[in-house]
Image 1 (spheres, rainbow, N blue to C red):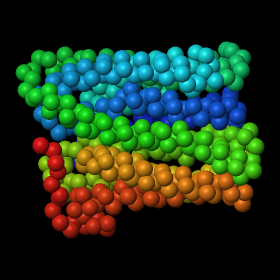
Image 2 (tube, one colour; image 1 turned 120 degrees about the vertical axis):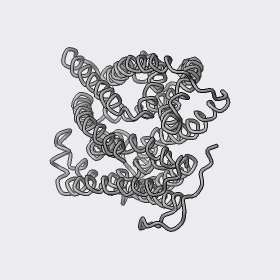
Image 3 (tube, helix red, strand yellow; image 1 turned 30 degrees about the horizontal axis):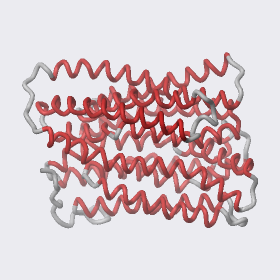
Image 4 (spheres, one colour; image 1 turned 30 degrees about the vertical axis):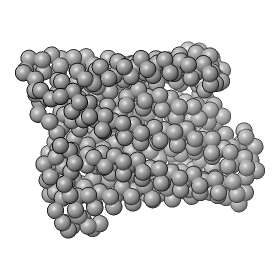
Length: 446
């Protein structure tokens, strides 16, 4: 428990600085791109995220889970296999991306160079995922925290430098925004891999344990494939969401330009503000996965129950005052980005969406630690289907429009959080009021 709390503290304290930098990044983008350009950037950003998800194959999670559960002597054989898988992945993804971008007009509508910028991300993210997974598994959270600061700090510096020196069109500015992601990821990779190199050198001095390659591959893929599937679905739904929102609003009677501006206020202003405190949720989730994996491998029900209680207490401690502030003073926050009454209204109405996601994010990490990857995936599918149905049904109604979109999002957040929580309670053998009912259900890891 001490390592978990220490990990959360280290990640959260540095993540707060990182989120402040991220906030400044969004502020720079909002002022430089304007509402229309911001809407355009937010529309293609999910596709960039999808490429990054495929490039990592969620290896940080599968590697960290294996490292946390197994003895040190088995670490090096797994990492060697992970490198081989990553090299194959880089080759396949690079070739597929080249042909797909040649056939489909995904990024060239922004700028002819945008395709190549996105392809550069593939090897950077893939190789970084190995180092990130190792440091998560051995719970060296400080390395991860500093790497995140490097990434965001360099991204902000790059944006400010370019935008202050050059007078760019909207399309060129959007391209620069994409390039800033690559710059940040590159410096994060250099930092993590240099530290990882010294760790591997120490591991090579020890006698490695022997496990069949099939066991090692299964340990990686049984976690990374379903988790990647979940992340792909999540990224796909986020890629579809801008299209669905704008289509629903146009169906409800708004012009395409007006619908794009409304989406820009939602995704470019309300979301960055509401999700700013989510650095705590992500910090808890990152520290939670190895802690839950280790406790579940030992069938330690008391430890799992204590971890779940701490997640709820920590989340409520920051989530409740944050959402009170979002509801009471939305104009104070949105004026930092744009002068827009609509953006303030969206932020006020979305407080349940943000509050419940503060819980859902670490609870998803709890599910991953328990090996309930398929459950987490199906939870996202169900909640997204309900969300999209309500968003279109209400958003296309002239009486609701953006209010209908927000109702759909809040409803989906309620469903997702409830499914996560009830599934965890059932799996670890506790009631919904967090009292023990029956022994811990046996796990399936051989």
